[in-house]
Image (cartoon, rainbow, N blue to C red; front, side):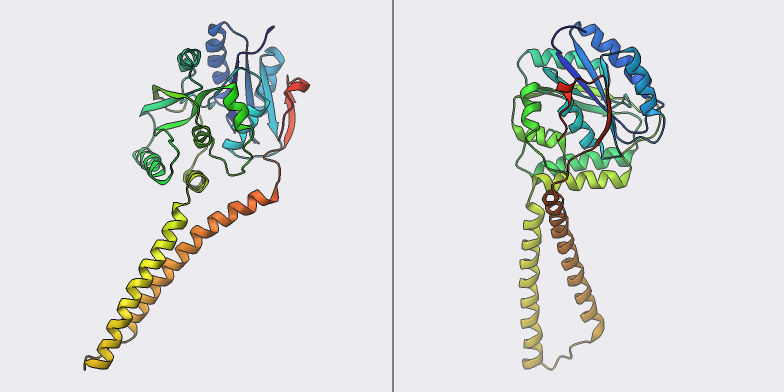
Length: 319
């Protein structure tokens, strides 16, 4: 398609053979309807199924579609980062391939962008096809994160959003490994607005965010934007030390000035186990931060690209 690219659509994929073709069709219909030059960048995050093969076939027939194929699975947030690194549009749209976030919302986002907003994020007012547990924990997490950080991160939002080129370029200067992209975009501080929508259930396949990955994602978000857990460890230690000192005075008083018999091992062991548990929790929190410092200190690249399709040399911008 001749002319400067206006929209880059970044689509991270991992084992999405059942949905990637339908995702492409819906995205193509929407982007053709905008009537401006665009590219669709699929980032294959180490899929083990036929996802990469299907995208390669699409690339053969549609030169607006591009592929970044990772050497292995590096994670959803890294895949988004790679798509942004290789994008060349004046605006970049991030959307998952599972069609829970409707591509048909992109024109509304584009309208807000043309009105002067640098970031237009999708705000979920309803989540279909998800369990009560996932809805409840997601709602709790977003509000907990908001209280833990001074960065204004909108609640009930995902990575589905449109960002201006200057936001994308600013994001490239941030090279931290354990990434929380939606938080980083909020941290940058550009003018932003939300567009409400109802999130659909998955078109096909299974979620790529089981509980274990959700827990890691939550830890990445909290440790990336807040030192409060470390402060909490210090405050808890001080508080427990204070009460321990008071208890010591009580024990000494009973020993020296009363005839009351101090009971033996059961209470002593209970108190000891309680305090040891608190200490281990605090060490675990500190360990999370130290582990992230270690990741940053190694300085490894964020991702390794095995191959690309329909990319010009100018698009080759790996970190």
